Length: 241
Ligand code: ADP
Ligand code: MG
Image (cartoon, rainbow, N blue to C red; front, side):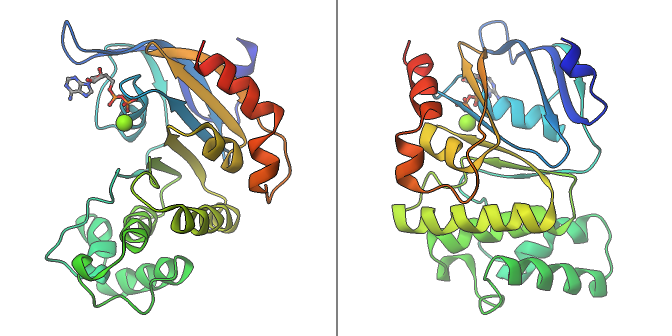
C-alpha cells in the first residue's frame, strides 16, 4: 500500500496480529495509518478488538506479530474515566505529570490549561464522587492531555453518558482537537458518533479491518445531516453485513 509510505503518518500498523492466548484472539492482520493531527475513529461490535488497538498504540500491550510505528508520548483516557476516588480533581489531572517528575509549577500550569479548556476550573478541589458523569469523563480527558501527548486515545469516552451531556462533550472534543491540533484516535460503537466527529472511520469486524471511510462533511456537523448521510448508510450496511 503506497499510501502507507507517506511520511506524514504518525501511527502505522502493518499486518498486526494480537492474541492474548491460544484461544483469545484479538486482532488478525490489521493494517491502517493515522496522519499527524488527524481525528480517526475505530468502530465495531463488542469484542472485535478496538480496545486492543488502543492498548497497542499506548504501548500497554505488544503485538504478537506485525509492525507498529507510533510516537513516544501517547495518552489513553480509559472507558469510564478511571479516576482515583480519594484524589481531588486537581490531583487526578496532575497524576500523569507528577509520575513523570514534573515540578509543581509545571503541574499547576498544565492543570489550569486543561481544566479551563474542559470547563473544570470551578471543580478542582472536589472529589470524583461530587462530579457528574460528564465531569468525570472531562477529568479523565484533562489528565490524559496534561502530559502533552502527541496522540490522544479515547476509549468509548461517552458510552456512560446521557444524550445531552454526550452532545456537549462532542462539541468540546472538536473544539479541543482544533485548539490543540493533537492527533485523536477514538473508539466508539456508534456509527453516527464516529461520523459526526472524525475525519476517518475504520470499521473493525472479525478482528480485522473491514473498511476505511474518509468523512469529508465540513464541521460543525449537525445531527440530522450526519444521521442521513451517505457515510453513515454505507458504514451501517457493511457493519451489519
Ligand atoms: P473491543 O474493545 O472491541 O470490545 P477488545 O480489544 O477489548 O475488544 O477485545 C478483543 C478480544 O480480545 C475479545 O475477545 C476479548 O475477550 C479478548 N481480550 C481482550 N483483552 C484480553 C486479555 N487481557 N486477556 C485475554 N483476552 C482478552
Ligand atoms: Mg473496548
